[in-house]
Length: 374
Image (cartoon, rainbow, N blue to C red; front, side, top):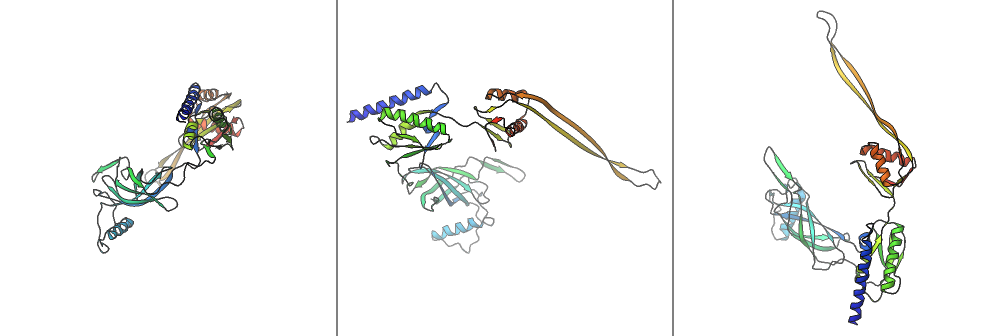
Protein backbone atom coordinates (compact mmCIF):
# COMPACT_ATOMS: atom_id res chain seq x y z
CA UNK A 1 0.00 0.00 0.00
CA UNK A 2 2.80 2.41 0.88
CA UNK A 3 4.61 1.61 -2.37
CA UNK A 4 1.42 2.31 -4.35
CA UNK A 5 0.97 5.68 -2.63
CA UNK A 6 4.58 6.66 -3.35
CA UNK A 7 4.19 5.65 -6.98
CA UNK A 8 1.02 7.71 -7.33
CA UNK A 9 2.68 10.73 -5.74
CA UNK A 10 5.69 10.37 -8.05
CA UNK A 11 3.40 10.13 -11.08
CA UNK A 12 1.51 13.27 -10.02
CA UNK A 13 4.76 15.20 -9.55
CA UNK A 14 5.98 14.07 -12.98
CA UNK A 15 2.74 15.13 -14.66
CA UNK A 16 2.85 18.56 -13.00
CA UNK A 17 6.47 18.97 -14.11
CA UNK A 18 5.45 18.17 -17.72
CA UNK A 19 2.66 20.78 -17.61
CA UNK A 20 5.06 23.36 -16.15
CA UNK A 21 7.75 22.72 -18.77
CA UNK A 22 5.23 23.01 -21.59
CA UNK A 23 4.02 26.33 -20.26
CA UNK A 24 7.47 27.90 -20.08
CA UNK A 25 7.38 28.44 -23.86
CA UNK A 26 4.19 30.56 -23.59
CA UNK A 27 4.53 33.61 -21.31
CA UNK A 28 0.74 34.18 -21.40
CA UNK A 29 0.15 31.09 -19.28
CA UNK A 30 0.27 30.94 -15.51
CA UNK A 31 -0.54 28.66 -12.60
CA UNK A 32 -4.14 28.13 -11.55
CA UNK A 33 -3.45 29.19 -7.95
CA UNK A 34 -2.17 32.54 -9.21
CA UNK A 35 -5.43 33.43 -10.97
CA UNK A 36 -7.99 31.86 -8.62
CA UNK A 37 -8.85 31.66 -4.94
CA UNK A 38 -10.82 29.07 -3.02
CA UNK A 39 -14.24 30.35 -2.00
CA UNK A 40 -14.45 30.58 1.79
CA UNK A 41 -10.69 30.52 2.33
CA UNK A 42 -10.03 34.12 3.30
CA UNK A 43 -8.62 36.18 6.18
CA UNK A 44 -10.80 37.97 8.73
CA UNK A 45 -10.26 41.54 9.92
CA UNK A 46 -9.75 42.19 13.62
CA UNK A 47 -9.81 45.52 15.47
CA UNK A 48 -9.26 46.67 19.03
CA UNK A 49 -8.74 49.76 21.18
CA UNK A 50 -5.80 50.01 23.56
CA UNK A 51 -3.16 52.15 25.24
CA UNK A 52 0.53 52.58 24.43
CA UNK A 53 2.64 53.53 27.44
CA UNK A 54 6.29 54.43 28.01
CA UNK A 55 6.46 57.27 25.49
CA UNK A 56 9.12 59.93 26.01
CA UNK A 57 6.77 62.90 26.32
CA UNK A 58 5.30 62.29 22.84
CA UNK A 59 1.94 60.89 23.93
CA UNK A 60 -1.55 62.39 23.98
CA UNK A 61 -2.31 65.61 25.78
CA UNK A 62 -4.95 64.51 28.29
CA UNK A 63 -6.80 67.80 28.02
CA UNK A 64 -7.09 67.52 24.24
CA UNK A 65 -7.79 63.78 24.26
CA UNK A 66 -10.39 63.08 26.96
CA UNK A 67 -10.84 59.47 25.81
CA UNK A 68 -7.19 58.80 26.67
CA UNK A 69 -7.71 60.12 30.20
CA UNK A 70 -10.89 58.06 30.65
CA UNK A 71 -9.14 54.91 29.41
CA UNK A 72 -6.19 55.54 31.74
CA UNK A 73 -8.49 56.02 34.72
CA UNK A 74 -10.45 52.84 33.91
CA UNK A 75 -7.26 50.81 33.54
CA UNK A 76 -5.84 52.05 36.84
CA UNK A 77 -9.11 51.27 38.64
CA UNK A 78 -9.03 47.72 37.34
CA UNK A 79 -5.54 47.45 38.80
CA UNK A 80 -6.74 48.74 42.17
CA UNK A 81 -5.55 52.38 41.91
CA UNK A 82 -8.12 55.19 42.27
CA UNK A 83 -7.15 58.36 40.36
CA UNK A 84 -10.63 59.77 39.72
CA UNK A 85 -10.00 63.06 41.57
CA UNK A 86 -6.41 63.44 40.44
CA UNK A 87 -5.34 65.99 37.83
CA UNK A 88 -3.41 63.95 35.25
CA UNK A 89 -0.76 65.69 33.15
CA UNK A 90 1.16 62.75 31.77
CA UNK A 91 2.19 62.77 28.10
CA UNK A 92 3.64 59.28 28.19
CA UNK A 93 0.39 57.53 27.21
CA UNK A 94 -1.37 57.40 23.83
CA UNK A 95 -4.72 55.93 22.79
CA UNK A 96 -4.38 53.70 19.72
CA UNK A 97 -6.42 51.53 17.41
CA UNK A 98 -5.00 48.05 16.80
CA UNK A 99 -5.79 46.24 13.56
CA UNK A 100 -4.83 42.78 12.32
CA UNK A 101 -5.84 40.04 9.90
CA UNK A 102 -6.70 36.57 11.15
CA UNK A 103 -5.39 34.14 8.49
CA UNK A 104 -7.65 31.31 7.35
CA UNK A 105 -7.46 28.08 9.37
CA UNK A 106 -5.69 29.85 12.25
CA UNK A 107 -5.60 27.81 15.45
CA UNK A 108 -5.47 28.78 19.10
CA UNK A 109 -1.92 29.60 20.16
CA UNK A 110 -0.62 30.88 16.84
CA UNK A 111 0.68 34.45 16.49
CA UNK A 112 -0.15 37.20 13.98
CA UNK A 113 1.27 40.64 13.16
CA UNK A 114 -0.59 43.76 14.24
CA UNK A 115 -0.63 47.45 13.27
CA UNK A 116 -0.88 50.19 15.91
CA UNK A 117 -2.16 53.67 14.95
CA UNK A 118 -2.54 56.74 17.16
CA UNK A 119 -5.99 58.27 17.73
CA UNK A 120 -5.16 61.45 19.66
CA UNK A 121 -2.58 64.20 19.33
CA UNK A 122 0.46 62.06 20.09
CA UNK A 123 3.49 63.04 18.04
CA UNK A 124 5.29 59.68 18.07
CA UNK A 125 4.80 56.09 19.27
CA UNK A 126 8.52 55.34 19.22
CA UNK A 127 9.69 53.45 22.30
CA UNK A 128 6.16 52.68 23.47
CA UNK A 129 4.67 49.42 24.67
CA UNK A 130 1.14 48.31 23.84
CA UNK A 131 -0.80 47.03 26.83
CA UNK A 132 -2.94 43.91 26.54
CA UNK A 133 -5.65 44.68 23.97
CA UNK A 134 -8.43 42.27 22.93
CA UNK A 135 -9.05 42.09 19.17
CA UNK A 136 -12.58 41.47 17.96
CA UNK A 137 -14.00 40.38 14.62
CA UNK A 138 -17.10 41.59 12.85
CA UNK A 139 -19.22 39.32 15.06
CA UNK A 140 -17.92 41.09 18.23
CA UNK A 141 -16.17 37.88 19.36
CA UNK A 142 -12.61 38.15 20.75
CA UNK A 143 -10.28 36.14 18.51
CA UNK A 144 -6.86 37.42 19.62
CA UNK A 145 -5.08 39.42 22.30
CA UNK A 146 -2.31 41.90 21.40
CA UNK A 147 0.60 43.18 23.48
CA UNK A 148 4.23 44.13 22.98
CA UNK A 149 6.78 46.80 22.06
CA UNK A 150 5.83 49.00 19.11
CA UNK A 151 8.28 49.30 16.21
CA UNK A 152 8.09 52.66 14.41
CA UNK A 153 9.98 53.38 11.19
CA UNK A 154 9.42 57.15 11.12
CA UNK A 155 10.78 59.80 13.48
CA UNK A 156 10.23 63.42 14.38
CA UNK A 157 12.76 65.88 15.80
CA UNK A 158 12.82 69.65 16.10
CA UNK A 159 13.02 72.75 18.20
CA UNK A 160 11.20 76.02 18.50
CA UNK A 161 11.98 77.29 15.02
CA UNK A 162 12.17 74.14 12.91
CA UNK A 163 11.09 70.51 12.95
CA UNK A 164 11.99 67.48 10.82
CA UNK A 165 9.67 64.53 10.27
CA UNK A 166 10.42 61.39 8.27
CA UNK A 167 7.86 58.69 7.66
CA UNK A 168 4.84 58.34 9.95
CA UNK A 169 5.93 58.20 13.60
CA UNK A 170 2.33 57.89 14.83
CA UNK A 171 1.87 54.42 13.35
CA UNK A 172 3.86 51.25 13.93
CA UNK A 173 3.80 47.47 13.86
CA UNK A 174 4.41 44.62 16.28
CA UNK A 175 5.67 41.45 14.63
CA UNK A 176 3.87 38.42 16.09
CA UNK A 177 2.29 40.86 18.52
CA UNK A 178 -1.07 39.11 18.89
CA UNK A 179 -1.79 35.68 20.29
CA UNK A 180 -4.74 33.89 18.73
CA UNK A 181 -7.22 32.79 21.41
CA UNK A 182 -9.96 31.44 19.15
CA UNK A 183 -9.34 29.70 15.83
CA UNK A 184 -10.84 30.97 12.59
CA UNK A 185 -14.19 29.37 11.78
CA UNK A 186 -14.37 26.77 9.03
CA UNK A 187 -12.54 23.61 8.04
CA UNK A 188 -11.03 22.26 4.83
CA UNK A 189 -11.76 18.58 5.33
CA UNK A 190 -15.21 18.66 3.72
CA UNK A 191 -15.76 16.22 0.88
CA UNK A 192 -18.31 18.48 -0.78
CA UNK A 193 -17.69 20.50 -3.95
CA UNK A 194 -14.94 23.12 -3.85
CA UNK A 195 -15.47 26.40 -5.66
CA UNK A 196 -12.61 28.27 -7.31
CA UNK A 197 -13.23 31.98 -7.87
CA UNK A 198 -11.42 33.77 -10.68
CA UNK A 199 -9.69 36.98 -9.65
CA UNK A 200 -10.36 38.39 -13.14
CA UNK A 201 -13.71 36.88 -14.16
CA UNK A 202 -13.83 35.71 -17.77
CA UNK A 203 -15.76 32.92 -19.49
CA UNK A 204 -12.82 31.88 -21.66
CA UNK A 205 -10.43 31.64 -18.73
CA UNK A 206 -12.97 29.60 -16.73
CA UNK A 207 -13.33 27.14 -19.61
CA UNK A 208 -9.54 26.84 -19.97
CA UNK A 209 -9.22 26.09 -16.24
CA UNK A 210 -11.87 23.37 -16.43
CA UNK A 211 -10.28 21.76 -19.49
CA UNK A 212 -6.79 21.72 -17.96
CA UNK A 213 -8.02 20.27 -14.65
CA UNK A 214 -10.12 17.58 -16.35
CA UNK A 215 -7.25 16.48 -18.61
CA UNK A 216 -5.02 16.14 -15.56
CA UNK A 217 -7.70 14.45 -13.43
CA UNK A 218 -8.55 11.97 -16.21
CA UNK A 219 -4.98 10.69 -16.25
CA UNK A 220 -4.50 10.97 -12.46
CA UNK A 221 -7.84 9.76 -11.08
CA UNK A 222 -9.55 8.26 -14.12
CA UNK A 223 -12.43 10.75 -14.24
CA UNK A 224 -13.29 14.40 -14.70
CA UNK A 225 -13.66 16.51 -11.56
CA UNK A 226 -14.20 20.10 -12.78
CA UNK A 227 -17.08 21.99 -14.36
CA UNK A 228 -17.60 25.65 -15.06
CA UNK A 229 -20.50 27.42 -13.37
CA UNK A 230 -20.18 30.92 -14.82
CA UNK A 231 -17.50 33.45 -15.71
CA UNK A 232 -16.41 33.66 -12.04
CA UNK A 233 -16.78 30.19 -10.46
CA UNK A 234 -15.39 26.73 -11.23
CA UNK A 235 -16.71 23.74 -9.25
CA UNK A 236 -14.39 20.89 -8.22
CA UNK A 237 -15.23 17.43 -6.82
CA UNK A 238 -12.50 16.05 -4.56
CA UNK A 239 -11.60 12.42 -5.43
CA UNK A 240 -12.07 9.92 -2.59
CA UNK A 241 -8.51 8.55 -2.68
CA UNK A 242 -6.75 11.86 -1.93
CA UNK A 243 -6.96 14.49 0.78
CA UNK A 244 -8.52 17.86 -0.03
CA UNK A 245 -5.34 19.78 0.79
CA UNK A 246 -3.16 17.57 -1.42
CA UNK A 247 -5.70 17.72 -4.23
CA UNK A 248 -5.75 21.52 -4.16
CA UNK A 249 -1.94 21.60 -4.05
CA UNK A 250 -1.73 19.53 -7.23
CA UNK A 251 -4.48 21.49 -9.02
CA UNK A 252 -2.89 24.82 -8.08
CA UNK A 253 0.36 23.94 -9.89
CA UNK A 254 -1.38 23.24 -13.22
CA UNK A 255 -0.70 25.79 -15.96
CA UNK A 256 -3.59 27.52 -17.70
CA UNK A 257 -3.88 30.08 -20.48
CA UNK A 258 -5.61 33.22 -19.25
CA UNK A 259 -7.75 35.60 -21.24
CA UNK A 260 -9.11 39.04 -20.36
CA UNK A 261 -11.47 41.44 -22.13
CA UNK A 262 -10.01 44.34 -24.05
CA UNK A 263 -9.79 47.33 -21.70
CA UNK A 264 -8.40 50.84 -21.66
CA UNK A 265 -7.88 52.25 -18.16
CA UNK A 266 -7.45 56.00 -17.75
CA UNK A 267 -6.54 57.89 -14.58
CA UNK A 268 -7.15 61.56 -15.32
CA UNK A 269 -5.64 62.72 -12.04
CA UNK A 270 -2.17 61.32 -12.72
CA UNK A 271 -2.30 61.07 -16.51
CA UNK A 272 -1.82 57.29 -16.43
CA UNK A 273 -3.04 55.30 -19.45
CA UNK A 274 -3.08 51.49 -19.60
CA UNK A 275 -4.03 49.85 -22.90
CA UNK A 276 -4.61 46.10 -23.11
CA UNK A 277 -3.01 44.01 -25.84
CA UNK A 278 -6.37 43.08 -27.42
CA UNK A 279 -7.56 46.67 -27.84
CA UNK A 280 -8.42 47.52 -31.44
CA UNK A 281 -9.47 50.75 -33.10
CA UNK A 282 -11.23 51.09 -36.42
CA UNK A 283 -9.66 53.40 -39.00
CA UNK A 284 -10.43 56.96 -37.94
CA UNK A 285 -9.16 60.46 -38.70
CA UNK A 286 -8.13 62.38 -35.57
CA UNK A 287 -7.50 66.08 -35.13
CA UNK A 288 -6.46 67.43 -31.76
CA UNK A 289 -5.59 71.03 -31.01
CA UNK A 290 -5.75 73.52 -28.18
CA UNK A 291 -6.93 77.10 -28.12
CA UNK A 292 -5.22 79.35 -25.56
CA UNK A 293 -6.62 82.81 -24.83
CA UNK A 294 -4.69 85.10 -22.49
CA UNK A 295 -6.22 88.36 -21.26
CA UNK A 296 -3.85 90.85 -19.56
CA UNK A 297 -5.19 93.85 -17.65
CA UNK A 298 -2.66 96.67 -17.06
CA UNK A 299 -3.92 99.52 -14.83
CA UNK A 300 -2.89 103.05 -15.86
CA UNK A 301 -3.26 106.27 -13.87
CA UNK A 302 -4.46 109.41 -15.70
CA UNK A 303 -3.09 112.46 -13.90
CA UNK A 304 -4.57 115.93 -14.81
CA UNK A 305 -2.39 119.00 -15.42
CA UNK A 306 -1.62 121.29 -12.43
CA UNK A 307 -4.24 123.92 -11.56
CA UNK A 308 -6.75 122.24 -13.86
CA UNK A 309 -10.12 121.15 -12.59
CA UNK A 310 -9.62 117.59 -13.80
CA UNK A 311 -9.69 114.46 -11.62
CA UNK A 312 -7.21 111.63 -11.27
CA UNK A 313 -8.70 108.41 -12.67
CA UNK A 314 -7.46 104.84 -13.15
CA UNK A 315 -7.89 103.30 -16.57
CA UNK A 316 -7.23 99.76 -17.79
CA UNK A 317 -5.13 98.72 -20.75
CA UNK A 318 -6.45 95.36 -21.96
CA UNK A 319 -4.33 93.06 -24.13
CA UNK A 320 -5.67 89.81 -25.60
CA UNK A 321 -3.43 87.09 -27.09
CA UNK A 322 -4.92 84.12 -28.94
CA UNK A 323 -2.80 81.04 -29.70
CA UNK A 324 -4.16 77.90 -31.30
CA UNK A 325 -1.76 74.96 -31.39
CA UNK A 326 -2.05 71.66 -33.19
CA UNK A 327 -5.02 71.01 -35.41
CA UNK A 328 -3.36 68.62 -37.86
CA UNK A 329 -5.48 65.66 -38.96
CA UNK A 330 -3.94 62.23 -38.66
CA UNK A 331 -5.27 58.84 -39.78
CA UNK A 332 -5.04 56.08 -37.16
CA UNK A 333 -5.27 52.45 -38.23
CA UNK A 334 -5.30 50.75 -34.86
CA UNK A 335 -5.59 47.13 -35.93
CA UNK A 336 -3.17 46.17 -33.15
CA UNK A 337 -1.74 47.62 -29.95
CA UNK A 338 1.53 48.49 -31.69
CA UNK A 339 -0.28 50.39 -34.46
CA UNK A 340 -2.34 52.29 -31.91
CA UNK A 341 0.70 53.33 -29.86
CA UNK A 342 2.63 54.29 -33.00
CA UNK A 343 -0.23 56.48 -34.23
CA UNK A 344 -0.57 58.27 -30.90
CA UNK A 345 3.18 58.87 -30.68
CA UNK A 346 3.34 60.29 -34.20
CA UNK A 347 0.73 62.86 -33.31
CA UNK A 348 3.01 64.09 -30.53
CA UNK A 349 0.26 64.07 -27.91
CA UNK A 350 0.79 64.42 -24.20
CA UNK A 351 -1.09 62.18 -21.72
CA UNK A 352 -3.94 64.68 -21.37
CA UNK A 353 -4.29 64.83 -25.16
CA UNK A 354 -4.21 61.04 -25.49
CA UNK A 355 -6.94 60.75 -22.85
CA UNK A 356 -9.13 63.22 -24.75
CA UNK A 357 -8.53 61.40 -28.06
CA UNK A 358 -9.35 57.97 -26.60
CA UNK A 359 -12.57 59.26 -25.06
CA UNK A 360 -13.58 60.86 -28.35
CA UNK A 361 -12.79 57.66 -30.29
CA UNK A 362 -14.92 55.68 -27.83
CA UNK A 363 -17.80 58.12 -28.30
CA UNK A 364 -17.47 57.67 -32.08
CA UNK A 365 -17.82 53.90 -31.67
CA UNK A 366 -14.38 53.12 -33.14
CA UNK A 367 -12.77 51.88 -29.90
CA UNK A 368 -13.40 48.15 -29.63
CA UNK A 369 -12.71 47.92 -25.90
CA UNK A 370 -14.09 48.82 -22.50
CA UNK A 371 -13.05 52.32 -21.45
CA UNK A 372 -12.57 52.67 -17.68
CA UNK A 373 -12.04 56.19 -16.32
CA UNK A 374 -10.81 56.35 -12.73
